[in-house]
Image (cartoon, rainbow, N blue to C red; front, side, top):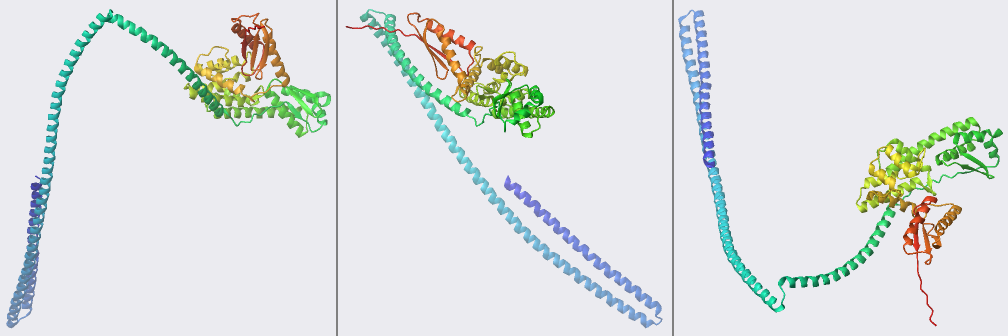
Length: 553
């Protein structure tokens, strides 16, 4: 079909060529006609000129001469015209022959290309036909092989069924023979075998359980150590705690007089504006500031330093300076709150809550800055949450807000209760509120996230060097721990160890029983929680030991 179409296209092009050739001859004839017309017009003009000459000339000889001239002119023009027409025809015939030759060559080339293309198409078709025949042959052979395998499988299946039948018959005969020899039925023999197997397996399982338990305990200790070490390393911070001291060094003792002012007006104005008590008798060149509110104490410290540096200490100046410092402190607390939230990756908190977190900058718990403690605890909690697979977002937010009750403006309960109220005020999620309420074990844990927050808080607050106490308060707390333990008649001795984080209680075996160990440990724990304030946790270990002694003579 491709060859036929190609030949049809070639035939059409040849016909177009001959049509163009015919139009060319027609044009040549048309071109020759204007030349003849021009000659005739010229002849007509010449004849008119001769007639005019005849009219002018009066003599007869002049007319005869004019006729001879016109005849010669006409013959010359006719001859010239015939020559031009013959030349044009010859040129047209030559061009026609050339065009015919070129058309024949082109037709031959088209025919050759078409034949070549037809041979290629035929060869391709034959090749595909051979490939298809080969594939069909392979498929036929494969089908024959599959049919043969199916026949073989059927035969093998029949042989297996016959073999199973013979085996079952042999098994039944053997069972009957065994029952006759042993005097027991198959059910009785099976029961005896199962009981013996259970005893053997029970011993092996108990031994395996003990072995696996020991391995798990050893592995769990190592894994727990690795997790805690990695968590504490992750929680390490480079934040330097800004300890807000309450002592100001004076350049000289004369400055005290300026601070007091005439009739004590300056010191009274300062205490009234700041809400802080000034102790000028602490040392000769020092002033001690006393106030339970660390923010007010910090405002007083900065204001007094600025007034001393300025030298103009008077009521009006004091009021202006304190107002300016309060504004600066408020701005610095807001910035500190924002920075804390960014460091732990918590965003979009209410502005009032962010400002409350900023008050951590001037809040300390046993010497540990609250911003440092919160940042450290949050990082530890996030790491533990990732390790344990609990909700990281809940742990992160709960660690950030767990001590927010410590900076409540109007506290009417402990910091846990106030923290819960603040969290509810700002519509925090219930999971976060539960973590805040349970981070000191005031209520039972309700989620793994709450336990993670509790552990992170304990790690940050109880690690060595995190917090410090006054030496007198430290010794007093240790003595109180021992006194609480020895207040019970069953206790023989009690020791506060591990920097007050553990109390070891030794019972008198004659005055106590084994059941008293756990009961007394709970009583001492409750009493410590009610009467003492301490960082972290205190472990109560109660020991009752009975010794027997005999002397051989």
